[in-house]
Amino acid sequence: MRRKVIAGNWKMNNDLQQSVNLIEELKSKLANKTLNCDVVICPPFTSLYEAKKIIDGSIIKLGAQNMFYEDSGAFTGEISASMLKSVGCEYVILGHSERRTIFGEKDEMINKKVRKAISQNLKPILCVGETLEEREKDVTEKVVKRQIEKGLNYVTPDEVLNVIIAYEPVWAIGTGKTATPEQAQEVHAFIRKLLASMYSKDFAELIPIQYGGSVKPDNAKELLSQKDIDGALVGGACLKADSFIGIIDAA
Ligand code: PGA
Image 1 (cartoon, rainbow, N blue to C red):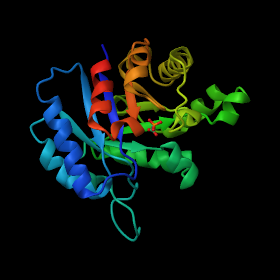
Image 2 (cartoon, rainbow, N blue to C red):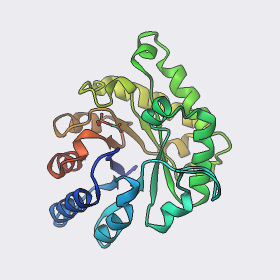
Image 3 (cartoon, rainbow, N blue to C red):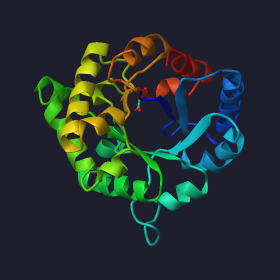
């Protein structure tokens, strides 16, 4: 059985005080719950250190939204995997569509990041997904296949068990348009089959595949009940404790 992972991608939201307030609210509201899923929050870099102090001893885990693949050096503005580890991160989102489109990240660079994250014991959440244009051209599977094959290039079977895939159709991100549970399940099943062909069926069964794109408390249950949907990567709805917890409850 794969354990579901609900991760909140805060994006560029919440300064330090706002972060502290939100995490304290989440922590206290989750304190008495017995959960069937893992809960991860990914605040901005500037809040990670304080976030770790607050979540210590709770079930909430910490992730970052990006990192660079070099260890250190002249890379102005970048953050390394070991820096993320040093403030208590266990996860890192890589290849988010906003990184790909706004910051021009390509599969090759994302692959270097994935491998560096794994080598530093960070679990990469590798994001993949098609644009609306690509869906309309009926190339969704082709795009997702390329992103996964290139993103996981040189990643060994042992290493891939530390990876989470997040399928996020770009047209569903922040738009209020969600893929139907059937549309999402279809792509998730395709991804699982692809992973089986790249690794093995047994390994593919162990890799969590999250869905992301306008997940809300009222659509989470149906999405998360699909056979191959193993959690959610949540943007907008993770910025309020009650809506994020609504999604956790659905899981
Ligand atoms: P959204 O974002 O939930 O606001 O659509 C999801 C994401 O970008 O990870």
